[in-house]
Image 1 (cartoon, rainbow, N blue to C red):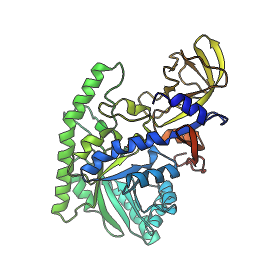
Image 2: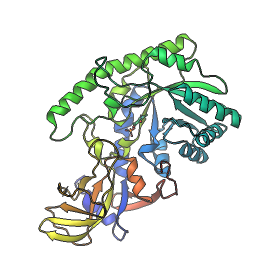
Image 3: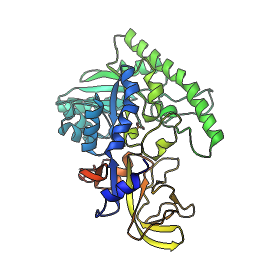
Image 4: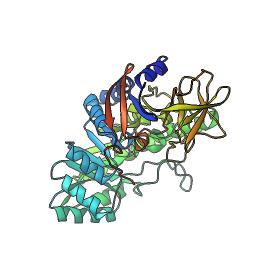
Amino acid sequence: MNDAYPRYRRALAGERLPAALVDVDAVDANIPRLVEPIRAAGKAVRIATKSVRCPDLIEYLVAKTQAIGLMTYTAQETAMLVERGHRDLVLAYPTLQAADLDAIARANKRATAALVVDCVEHLAAAEAAAKRAGSTIPIVIDIDMSYRPLARGPHLGVRRSPLRSPDAVLALAEKIRAPLRFHGLLGYEAQIAGLGDAVPSSFATNAVKRAIKRRSEPVVRALRRECVQALRARDLAPSIVNGGGTGSVASSAGDESLTEITVGSGFLASGLFDEYKGLTLAPAAGFALQVTRHPAPEIYTCLGGGYVASGAGNGAPRAWLPPGISLLGAEGAGEVQTPIHSKTPLALGDPIFLRHAKAGELAEHFDEYLLVRGERIESRAKTYRGLGYCFLG
Ligand SMILES: Cc1ncc(COP(=O)(O)O)c(C=O)c1O
């Protein structure tokens, strides 16, 4: 929105900077873009909490999208969300720690808190915890959805599950016994959902990425279908089949095997999701820094800013507002200070706005989100960090 800079500037006047803001109008604009294709295909939405990390905002999204539940990222986080009243959760990333599994086993006395696994070791650890707690843990099996066009060729996708065939999935499903129960399948097609294919100035690489997506899509669908068929044939019909992510909403919606699609980052439209063909989202989260120095014409130095994302890609924050600002190649977003280039004249004390590359990680740098509507702060929402949680620290 063209008026975003003056609006945010007015909204944040008098606030301590750096500060993180979420533009709730922009979130509201993103919701139908992500959810409508999923609903139109008759599938449920599941919210990826790792991409939000702010309970009030998670609950806002659940209500607005009528999500079936949450995809969580750690066991202690899952337990906390059950305490807050959530009743349908899938912990998507395995753990072997007894304390974690005990928390999941206890959570299942009040909610359905499914556990994702991919090997017998995961099952054995979960089984022991369920026995200790006297509860039943629903189990979701993770299928490797990566694209491997050649037997000895590249692995295009994430490195998570070793299960790549219906036989392998079925063999593990048949080992699930009380007090565990088979609940469903997870298959995250990262080479489609997590691969930006409209990266500026990368014309040739974008074309290759689009070809990978196009070719892997039918392979992904076939594998999911065959896994579901193999399980059904042994009376192990999955209750849920989860897949997709922000970057694959359109293609995942067309996969008949999926009962639900996970979405997280797209609601806040973090920087990485600017780089997807056919995905137009409104930037909805960012952080404000104060201009503290003016070392040269059109160069302004700000306090803070070095909130760099995990992963192998471009993890630097994206320059946002006022329009036309850019980070300096020589320094990037700094440990303590961040210089920017701006043709718009700025005064010392003025705010500038950057966006994090990843949606959830922004919350690790701030205690609260300022929830902005129009040009005012409508409310404040504590992040996990602000509530004292550090689930992966
Ligand atoms: C298992 C799983 N599902 C879905 C997603 C998609 O999340 P998002 O919509 O935030 O990209 C991810 C992201 O890494 C994931 O690990």
